[in-house]
Length: 119
Image 1 (cartoon, one colour):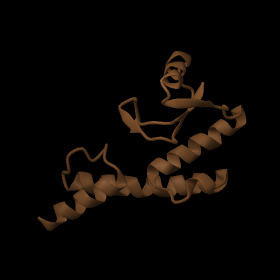
Image 2 (spheres, rainbow, N blue to C red):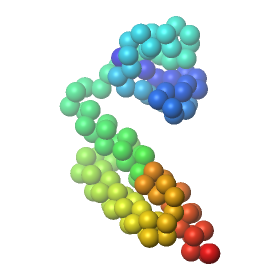
Image 3 (cartoon, rainbow, N blue to C red):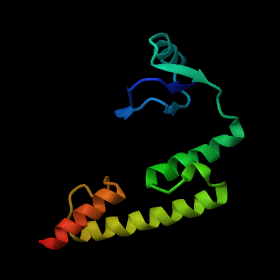
């Protein structure tokens, strides 16, 4: 079941906001959220769009601008570029002995590197 949230919900340790769409929710949980007014059911994506949707979601996580509007080829290029940038930041952070470098986002790494270089 796919749902669109109407309220703030915590899912898998992450807070989600109204308007977010959650794919492949367990039917029991989805029906409970709908009954409580926190969500509404939406049409599931066609199976062939699942890969494209996954690419868009990965691109958004990496901070690709306007990821929702890009096609598959451009998404793959942008994701590869962002992942390369992230790897460079992680390498630099490891050299500077920054704790948790492997779990930080690009923005967090940039800030931590800047702070470490001031010292």
